Amino acid sequence: MNAFKYKVTIKNGKLDLPTLDLPEGTIVEAILLVNEQPQKEVEETEYLLSTEANRHNLMEALEELKQPQNYIYVDPAKL
Image (tube, rainbow, N blue to C red; front, side, top):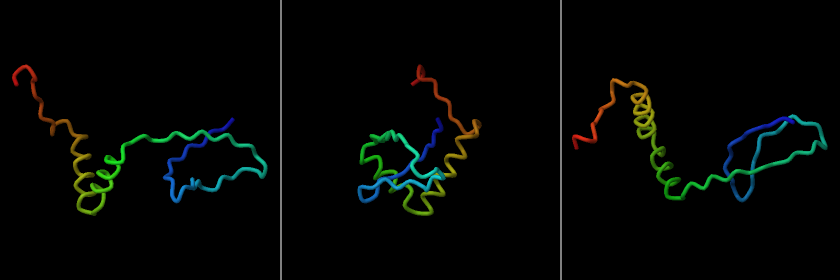
């Protein structure tokens, strides 16, 4: 058995997968895993990625997270 994994978005009620190079008549079993992400989170993500400036700032922030010297350590006991 082979497995293929694709992450797609439903558009107009349809699931659009890339063309698979499988012989005609191949039986395929599909299991759909639906992301239960709340709509508000989706809207926030779309907003954050809506402009080039926002995308740039987010990517820059992600790169900074890869550098531990940028971390600010806090001792909860001292708060």
